[in-house]
Length: 166
Image 1 (cartoon, rainbow, N blue to C red):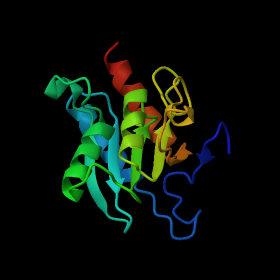
Image 2: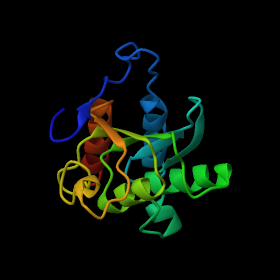
Image 3: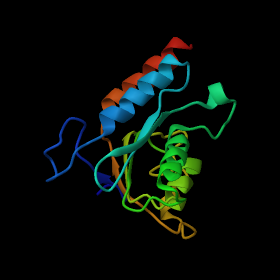
């Protein structure tokens, strides 16, 4: 563990943990779709305890004129609606970028069991950077956190997106 985070298997390495299947490629597909819409390329998927993707989303802050329309928030809303509950025990969230403090709080409130993220976010992250939401005494639930999964591709998407806008 580094900084309280477990370094998970890398994208495409589904044999690193017995029975583990990474769903980061589905999150990366959502990030690519977000970029194609002119949104910051962040994608997220939520996986049920049975291993089925139950929600997927990419950033839609510009499209919806909603600063809270981050990929994680949209995926959590969809998964909660599908489950008929505000909580998602046993579920996993895969997201291409380290969640910001708002999204980290939502992950905690939803009681998501495991968080897998790709690229670190030194500027706006809220898990290993900045606020470190899950390490605060006010945090009622902290998921297992695995970082660096699919990080190279997530970083490439973000770098290309912002380079095109400069």
